[in-house]
Length: 308
Ligand SMILES: Cc1cc2nc3c(=O)[nH]c(=O)nc-3n(C[C@H](O)[C@H](O)[C@H](O)COP(=O)(O)OP(=O)(O)OC[C@H]3O[C@@H](n4cnc5c(N)ncnc54)[C@H](O)[C@@H]3O)c2cc1C
Image (cartoon, rainbow, N blue to C red; front, side, top):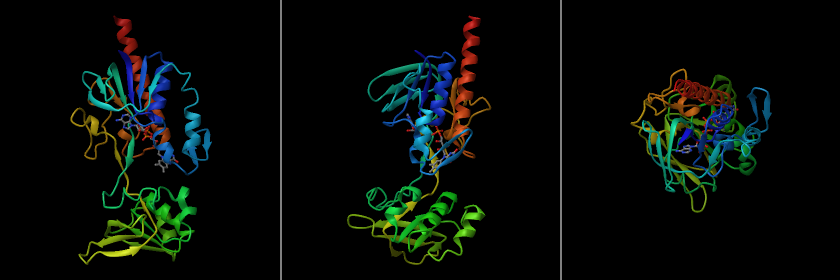
């Protein structure tokens, strides 16, 4: 029996773990990936907005965040796949066969990039699918590329690619780009960039790598093909919360609903970080919320233990 089981070892889960340890709680962290760090692995831009720390990218920040993990008093299992969970009973079964039980649970499972689920998207991973303009733009210099999405991330990536690519075609399903005005204003005079609004990507085509995309306009005209060598998809994120569906309150998009103390609709089950923060997900928000959950749990357990 553990005091706390934390599910997910991104910034929120790591912060909660260090706090639980400091507060004397017997803590186990379950991370399904082979490595801890969550989205920090995909942050290729400098991080300048975490108070007191500047990092060239997410991995550098992760090195700072994970300093001391090995010496800390909490257990951390990577590659831990949950087969089933009963939140009310606080019981977890892992695929590997272990049965776990705790007094409290903190869910810090974060979010994942939304996908288009169209032919070619998975098959061409690493063969023309661009993960990040910051990371990959030199690889695609001189090539025609396509960017899907209309928010800040899509337009910012399109602008970066337009510095080195002869053409950048932005495909956005809405009527107007949603990105902040400053980005859209920089896009308009850029001769390399063409924007197709009210349009969707229906296929990514190629023999052994990306060679073209198929675009469908919403005006009902026939789909057309465009020759490109790279495709970058930035259409938002979705919460990793399916595992808990039907057991606690979530909003219509699947984000877990929490109160001011990060507690969910199930007593002694807490959620922190992006999985419970649809409006302002940040690293500092995630670490703060993880700390709050840990402190509330410690206070409750201390009160229970001193009463009896
Ligand atoms: C490109 C990019 C740039 C960004 N730049 C910034 C920035 O400059 N500043 C900033 O503040 N924020 C930035 N962010 C956002 C920031 O990375 C997130 O807000 C932060 O990582 C959220 O932390 P988290 O712990 O809530 O979730 P995550 O980082 O998503 O971590 C969740 C963890 O839970 C694990 N997990 C998921 N499901 C399970 C399961 N069933 N069982 C066990 N483990 C599970 C995942 O594998 C992952 O390790 C950026 C994000 C991206 C993608």
